[in-house]
Length: 365
Image 1: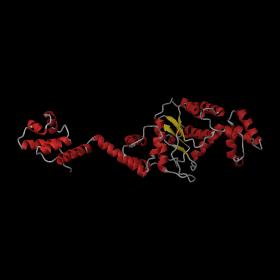
Image 2: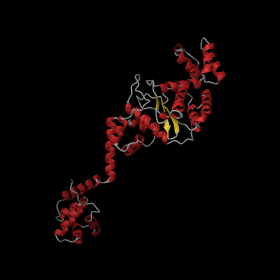
Image 3: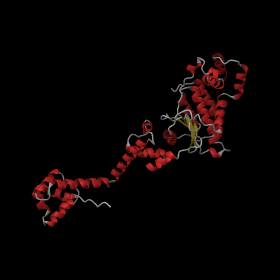
Image 4: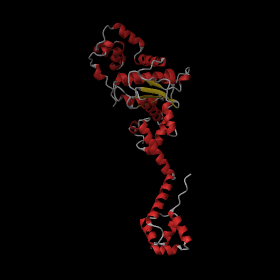
């Protein structure tokens, strides 16, 4: 156990007692105010270079001794100072995080949430819902949501996937929306499809519509090697949808959003399926769970009703831009969404030139 280091003023006070010398006598010898010397002897003021030299001249050890004792005391005091201890711990853990790469710090620095240096490490712990570095490592290692599957097509960095997922949950907790009611489903879908058809300021209008019906929504850019286009989950009592906007196409945005709405209505809030309420549903290309097929069907059939789609493909042998545009105008469905489904079901149309391509750009503002 380390011996307690005492202030050099206390050492000097002991020397005065041994020599039967008064404080006023010493103050006079080293030419300092008695009040200053008194504070030094009590450990309230430090021995500086000038006083150390004066003590040496007065026969009280050499100046180096006093400066060394003062330095040892200052270091001892710093090592036992709570703020210094916390700062030292934060720096070490921040460096460990950087070296091991368990948290993509560059990703969090871009989120404008006050994470820039080791002073902000507690914010990292808040996002990961842990108390310390060891708990952080365990949190990352144990991350294994039921409905996320490692992609076979894209490179994946698990630590980055964890960061994106937990940042989504953290940001959702900062948002407040009205009470969610399943009974508003039809009204919600109708407003969204109208928004897509007009295709103006789509992302902001989508957020406003979803918030109006009690669903939290925002977009969140992904760190590298994070193959997730979106995620849906419950944030307290509100369904939440987060999209990464991998593609800037209206049809992709609309389908991805409706896919996640499928999870909201078919799984997260379904009264007969309580087992899904606390799950997190990710969109990533390698997932073949039945719930993903259900969400895909929900998106497909709510963007374009199955009955009118069946009539469309039955009555047309070819799907030219003119035919798609006519169908679009008749049913108030954006032509990009119509052509997107045509290309999905008939691959040969995917590479064909189309005037609808420019119309399909996601108009974010």
